[in-house]
Image 1 (tube, helix red, strand yellow):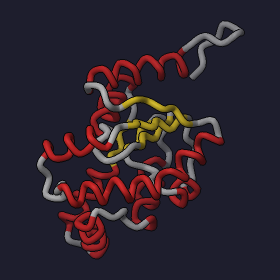
Image 2 (cartoon, rainbow, N blue to C red; image 1 turned 90 degrees about the horizontal axis):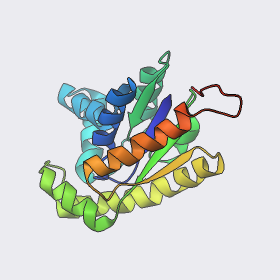
Image 3 (tube, one colour; image 1 turned 90 degrees about the vertical axis):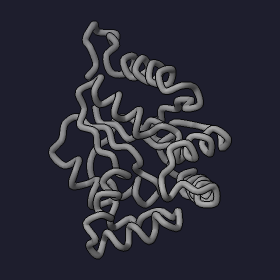
Image 4 (cartoon, rainbow, N blue to C red; image 1 turned 120 degrees about the vertical axis):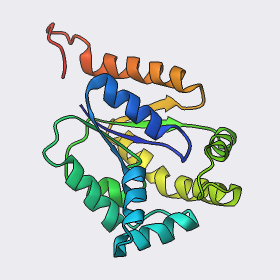
Length: 186
């Protein structure tokens, strides 16, 4: 099982990815967590990442693509949260992915959740900017994976537990149901 989980900021990608990773014994690769660690390293890339994050902009593809391709190479089962964020990242992924989980959420729910988590980069102005950037850059990604029949849309507005149950049950149906020959799919 090789999964990406995308959705607007605050839709619950990281939380759901952690829970799904534990449930299905997958390696969890949290792009946001990795990027925040790189900022603390104070390297050249760390400074670039910090500058982009402080403005609420997407981190340059050359940095994110390298991280994802390195972290997923030679890994049989994974879930990557926060990738791909734009069409170039989707097209630039060198590996194979089975499903892209798309957590949908309303702007009202996103803003409320992000303000509650009290991160430095979660001011109302930056949150609204991040939502606009997300909508502009990620819409083509959604269309791209929908066309490939890889997109799995899940409502991210309910509680964490409700979203998890819906997502877990949907993944079980897709990956562990009997096919017409009586065999279980991977």
